[in-house]
Amino acid sequence: MTLPQNHVKELIQRIQASSRDREVLLIADNELGFTQRKNGGESRCLFAVVADGASVIATETYIETVQEYVDRRSKGSGKGSQAGKGGRNRICVSFSGFHGEEDRGDEVSATPSETEYDVHMCEVNCFITQLEKGIGRAVELIEGRDYSFPEPSHNGGGCGKYEVHYESIMWRQLRKKLGGLGLLYGLEYVRSCTAMIRGVFKCKRVPPCVVAKYVALLLERATRNELVLISLRASLHDGACDSSYSPIDFLVPRYDGNMQDFETRVRKTGEIIWEAVKELFLESADKNGGRNLRYLSNAQIGFLDEWFSEIRLNSFRRWSKTAPARSEELAPEPCQETGSAHGVRNLLEKLGVPIIADKVAFVVRSGSCLFNLQTERSDEDYTIVYKTETPHLFSRKPPADCYSAHVISPSGFASDKAGEVEYEAKEVGKFIIECCKGNPRNIELLFTDPSDSVFISLEFHLLREIRHIFLTGRCLSQYFGFVSERLHKIRKLLEDESSYNDREKTKLSPDAEAAASKLLYHAFHKLLGIQSIAAYKDPVVRLSDDSADRAFIMRLRTTRPMTGDIYPSVLLRRAEGMLAKAKESQKVHDEKRREAGDPPRPPEVNLDKIRAVLDRIRLLGAPSHLVDDGGCGGGVAPP
Image 1: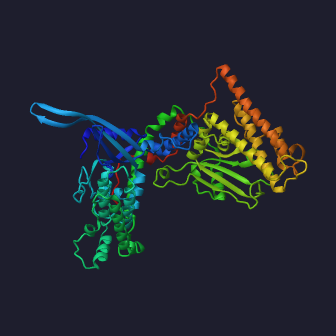
Image 2: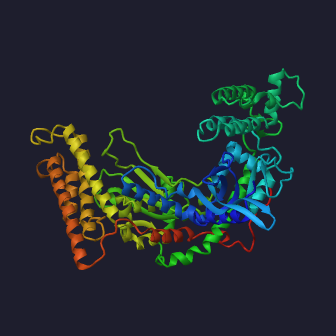
Image 3: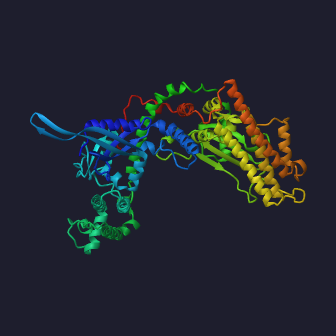
């Protein structure tokens, strides 16, 4: 039954409002979404294909990740937030109206009713993946045999088992280019149809008669591939059969009310189909046409990629016209770049990092060198923050958001890595997520003096300008957790060495001593950071050459054997005492701020400010041809 136009318009508006800058491409009946009577009204399940806005992909996805993390931590459970991706991919919309109207002359009799729509949404990138895999519903929404469209396709339209209630111009263009010719019925489509049958039988809430009808449809779909049809005819009649004969008329079992028996016979039918097509799977390359019989052709995939890119590009252009004004209210003006871009290019080549130098936002010599606590046996560590190129960010398969190269030593933790070079590179979105979570290693990079960095871009300066919003209660808890974890490992190490209670009689092995030294240096350095953050100051990162704290840490790092006041068990108790005092100090400083009327430390980051700055970072340096469409409208020219 076709939906009323006012319902369709309202559904489009509600779907668009379910996510920032979302575009509706298609609204159709959900194949298992049969209409039900419910509380005097109707409940109907719909399926929508949507295109998330460029702002969601570039910014909002990262904000949602942080919000879901905060919600899980706040609730103390491992379950995800309903406000995240799952929450915005399904909506329920109700309409009040009348049903059962009868014309009785001058009188109209009507009963109040309510129509409810349960809309399941599929992002267009996911839909294309389903299309490539041959998922039945995805293929049929393009081929059109089982759907009635508002505008018929060039093959005359479908048989109308289900209806399409809305399709955008871009969707109609896709359907007219790829659909109606049966070219999408590859062998993976056959596999998908038979596999879906098993899932349908698991839908216990669906009436058996509906299950039977849908199973029959899936079995009929499995024979729409011409090669499969020929193979089935040959297997059932030894090659002698009428070309007009449809094997499915013989194969599809009838439902007689016994679901268990029906399922058994359907499984047998599936086995017959597989037996008939297994040779086709083994020889899936069509030598004559050069087309893979299992999947879409290269030309079809190429058109899909171009069509998808145009959708993303149009969304990015719309976003770029509104995002700067919004973000400038919250984000600071950018500073100048720090460091040499030429030096960055040479470093990337030296490290072998697969990143374009122009997209690097930050490079620093990290590890112990960042803290000025390196020894002559330390390795050479680098941390890189980069920005994904705009076209690649919106591509169907975006590049990795993290690259790394670490030397795995047979000696394990705290091994001698003199002369080794390691790196870790993170995409700016991933880097910001970890900052929002309070990761000490990332927080320290924001508070590193620019003079100690190899390179800082305009984008990273934007983050540095708002770095204090990351010093939250969450961040301080992460610092405490980091130190506690290191101290726990030291206790375990000392227990394994049987020296925790009798430090004078047991000598640590060289490997255990090296591990204890590194764990203690980590703990004492982060304790200095805790003391600063608890006092509402910037965290300590680099220790000056004449610092007493540096002299103490370097002593425990370099002195062997570790005896007297730097014996691991002695240092462990010292660190435990400092940790306890830091917790008390935090309470004292918080109380003083309350008494002075100053704002307390926020428990979490301000996501509005993060969103605004990330918007600007994504738009900075975007190619001009992506921002300005030159007056051209959307649409893809057929290849």
